[in-house]
Length: 393
Image 1 (tube, rainbow, N blue to C red):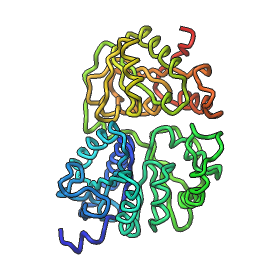
Image 2: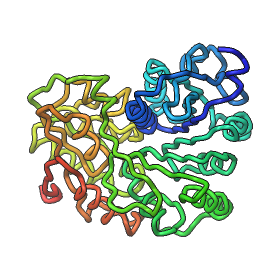
Image 3: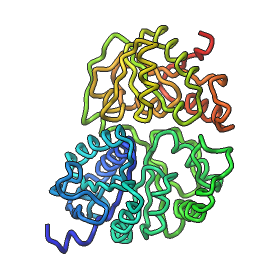
Image 4: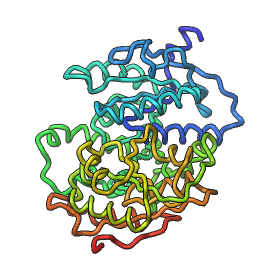
């Protein structure tokens, strides 16, 4: 690759902050390449060096990796990881970044939260790429980081890939013309940072609204019944995951999937523990797959009081389940996986069962919209078995 070719920069720039977002960028790239498979690839990679990024010895930055061809524009895709500080999330992101490099993608690792000056270094280093990119792919339109980066780009094509069930709320808020706020934060008074950031958030919402100059695509496995005019919704069927992993070996027991609803202040921790204990006893669950945001203290208590084996996955659960071994029944509370696991496990004999959140489990600080949103997550899930609440057990 000549320096001149590399200096052109990628035509597609993707920003991710979580392992699931990175997985869904890989799914989008796979689906995009499959849809345009008649176009021969001609990769153009962006060098990894730059202010705020890892140096070439970082095992994730992949200095020697090549870019992947954009099947439409004929230029490269650069995947930018805006790394969080949480160790579990960072670990899963590193594993996902390795898989992305194995697929031929360029990965750029940014220590975006590594100190007071980190955001300035990160944004300064990414600004030239943002100005040249023709397409921006993002995993979290609610992210202040992403919203700030959107004010810099001149890209004509914007793509939002799933960040879990939040995608459903994003599309609904965009259709209603509302400010972009995560569902579990709605109902509270905006803080000082919200007020200061409001102009940036409003600008991001305008940029994420289709116009004569801009196209907007939502790539999602979530049920999206009505999208704003001009927004193109493309189905994510996890074809890359199914092609890359499995089929899994299936065990005779049940597995239980954890949730971070306690950590986000939505569900009372004692009620949650009671529900997990009841589910495990009723359905014979032996393993508990922890959400990456679940606290260590909570998991220790769960292990001690339920006897469940606590598993800290090193990859998103869709890949863990597809790789196997996995239980014949997967038990979950309302979450993204009740939509994604049936797609990832299609063709297997695994049954996904979801247990509703009883209103009595909610904390007094939970958003007024929490119960309705969580019920909607369960009610719109396809190919899952719905369990009655275990509140009375």
